[in-house]
View 1 (cartoon, one colour):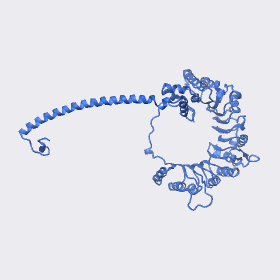
View 2 (cartoon, one colour; view 1 turned 90 degrees about the vertical axis):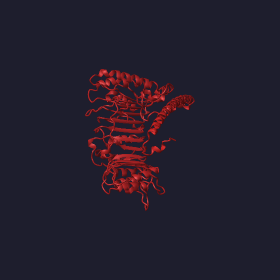
View 3 (cartoon, rainbow, N blue to C red; view 1 turned 180 degrees about the horizontal axis):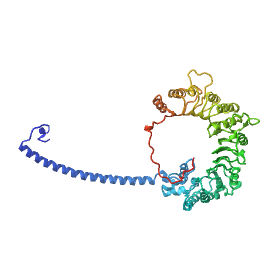
Amino acid sequence: MSIFTHLFTSNIVPTDIEVKRIKSLTVKTAADVKALEAEISRTQAHLQELICRREQLRGTMVAYETLVSPVRRMPPEVLQNIFVHCLPRRYPVMHKSEAPVLLTQICSGWRNVALHTPELWSSLHIVCPCFTLRSPSSSSPSFRLQCEAVRQWLGRSGTRPLRISFAMTMPPHDHGDQLDLSAPLLQLLLPYRRRWQHLELQVPMESLNSLGLVTEDVPTLEQLNIQENLVTLGQETRWPDSIIAMMNTPSLRSLSLNHKSGQFHLPPIEWSQLTELRLEAFSSVPSLNTQMILTTLQLCINLRVCILGVPLSQTDLRSRHGLLVEKPIEVPHLRKLCFIHHHRRAASHQVNLFDNLVLPELRSIEFGHGGEVLSAFRDLLLRSHCSLESFEIQSLLGTTDALIGCLQLAPKLSTLIVSRDLHTGPPNRIASVLTLKDETTGTLLCPNLERLKFVDPAFSDEALIMLIRSRWDQVPPGVKRLKSVHIKFSRDAISDIRPEIQTLRDEGLDIDVVYPMPRDTAPVTPASRKMTWPSPWEGLA
């Protein structure tokens, strides 16, 4: 302890003798500090040396652990199986950011395993390279490189069945050079035609004229998706002979036709072998009407899934026709029916199809509008005696009585999706009829409902909570609890139900309730990353 401690907490002025002594002590203390600093420096240097030695030992330890790690000792067959599960569910693209290309960049061992796993290379999405209109010849090197890459990719597929998607990005005018440059890339697929299992072509129809295929060339083709991506309004397109040949292979089960121009006829094929059919068109199809669609469906005796996005002939846009055939046509195995176009002009087509069909195995339905369409669908349910499980309706118009009538005929319904609730009548009508009441007697509405989704609903926040709670808290015997609720309002929140939503989420319900974000708090999106065009993902759903 210093002899001057009593001066530290006072204003006493030291004497001259004390000043001389204090200065002497200051010099000595400074020397002690310097000595300690030197010791600290030596200690820090020693500590740093120890830290470096520790890191070196850790690196050696990691290296030793790597040598005996399970993944290093994993049999190639197991590693191959893991690699296969890394593939995306869609078609893989030729890019280093995802499998299988990504798997070849980890280490030489993984690269060797990946390159010798045919299943990794048996699926591919091909996008034609960027085309320069001003100088078509300058695009040739890109097409040659693409051809070589595709050749190497498919060459690794061994004898596996192939899933191939081919997308050709087309300029709006003067596309002849683009077709000429893309032809070798398309022709490159022909040597593998006997192994085609799934084939998706997003190309102009004229590019398929030179394929020269016959039915025997594609014995394993099960799924064919043709998307014409060049609009030629006013010109009727003839199906190329090669496409007709592929459509008539006995192995074909799924057919999707997407025509931009709308000027086409349904091809002459063996409809009875199809289990999935998808028809889409960019504009109205003068050559098609409800009667022709019914005739086609009558031939599809094994159809399981039917997706229609065809704006039919303008002459077919009349009011409800009633029965167009001698008796309603039964499609005995159809489980899913979906109408893609939900504009009002399509409503009469949906009504006329519903009036003339019997679907005893229908499990899932999607269509647009309410009113007359819902009434026709209710009649279809009455005729078909089916066990509907999934019901999606777009743009609910008119009163809710028709919708309630449909729900009453679907006791096994587990999924209900309603978008754009524009019905007239009490605003909470739908939520009210779906809410289970304590005094409910008789038949419950939708006792098996598990998944609920509303976009732009017309009920209040409180009505929503009451509906959810009635089907979540101590539900009556014979009623299933909700599993997921997804609501997207186009209005601002009126009541703060966030605590209730969080409570439900904590209790295990998959729930998401979204309101519009205020403009002044909307997030600013970052600038788009620089990407090559066309993107390797161009044309993928």
